[in-house]
Amino acid sequence: FATLLQESLGSAYSVRIGMRYSKPTIESALKEFSNESIQKLLIVPLYPQYAEATTGSSVKEVTRQIENLTLNFSTQTMSPFFDNKSFIKM
Image (cartoon, rainbow, N blue to C red; front, side, top):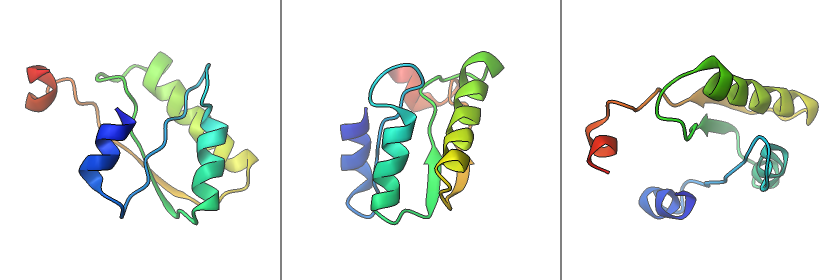
């Protein structure tokens, strides 16, 4: 997913995977972004629908890690995409 998204976006963007309970971790992804002087972070949950237990808790963990690492990122979270035509075609 990350490789295809990176190819689609091009070199003007940096794509990283950060997982809540596995590797690579959210913390390691954020540290990589901080080394690249990233200022804006778009969080793309890999859950197509929104649920507090999955998407909500993952986004909260990203925010918590940003605060713990004292990073100065502005963040935005991608909206649920369960009804996106491109996703449905997959």
